[in-house]
Length: 246
Image (cartoon, rainbow, N blue to C red; front, side):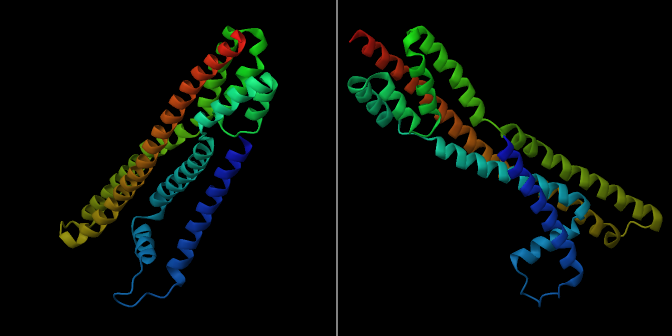
């Protein structure tokens, strides 16, 4: 948990540094020649046009959301185990060296499936019913570990469009204030303000859409691992029943 929080803290510091860099470049960078604007330059210009006061929270949501997503993708990919091979190894170990040999294989194998198997094998002497309860309980713990951080991604997906709409509403109010002050409704007076206001909504929707795609991928990956854990747990119980009968 400490490593996870440290990871998020680093990304937050990176966000602040990036925003400071944008402000520094705003005043000091030379304007590019016509037709030579890079993608980075365009993004920077839109960021400034949309008002950094509203765009910075959106940038923070995006960077923190992607940081959690990357951490979850790495964790879930490392949690993937070849359950068929592991079950075959455990079956051979039970036949040749007993439960202690099977536990040693689980200790040397990464992933939640191996951890669940170890907990079940560690309670083997207490009976199959206790093993089954232990496997179910520890499976819940492993599932909680896999879902860690998902609630924050969901929060960023929900709050990004809201922040965008908030910036748009504030921008529209400012535009109408300008109309009231000038006593004129000329398009040139309000077009710029409305454009700037809509940029925050566009940014919020883009952030939410990108995070939503990765969120759905992670949910699918977690569901796949949970199904794998459940199937493998049933197979482990069957192996232990056969071992006791022998």
